[in-house]
Image 1 (spheres, rainbow, N blue to C red):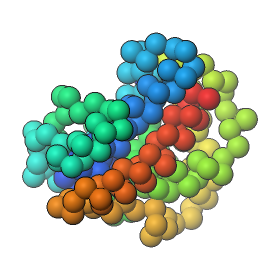
Image 2: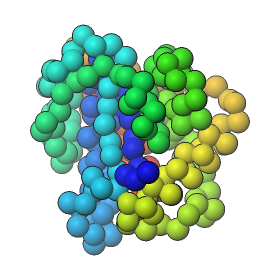
Image 3: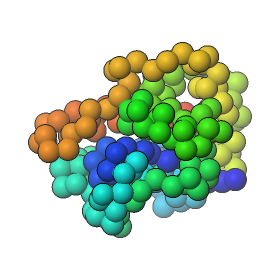
Image 4: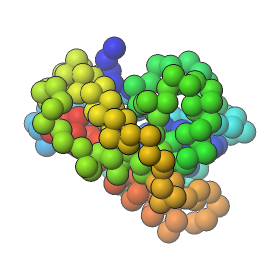
Length: 203
């Protein structure tokens, strides 16, 4: 049921998955702006949130260099609080994007039925680039339209991987403690997937 829900997963939920969460929100808002639709309605179309496989940082704000990347790109970090991944979050997600293959395995071990909708972020971006979108439901900037298109997009990406494994380059480096240059590179890699995703949902 709408909105189309994307769950981003990393280890501690203070660096990679929060950046992915908020940069997808930004990409959807920018897309709506280009379409001449009020970007204030973005949350009704796509629900982007995140969690970590570990709960060490539960309740903490985004790591400062991660927050700097989001705000520098025009995103918003207000209201973010880290949390540990739970089964019900996976169950409610239409798409689960993990920072690494290890985290993908963690999600699928927790919820085996989520395997068809769980991808490493870089893997999903790679598959998305090769998908023909003309067979998807028509694009509409409505909750029902984006949901139908998103669910079909995930199914198409799952079919496209045909049991193939992920590539080492699909993983996002863990930038924790490594300075702004590393965070900037990781944020660029996140945008390489979340911007095409927003474009596919709202062409």
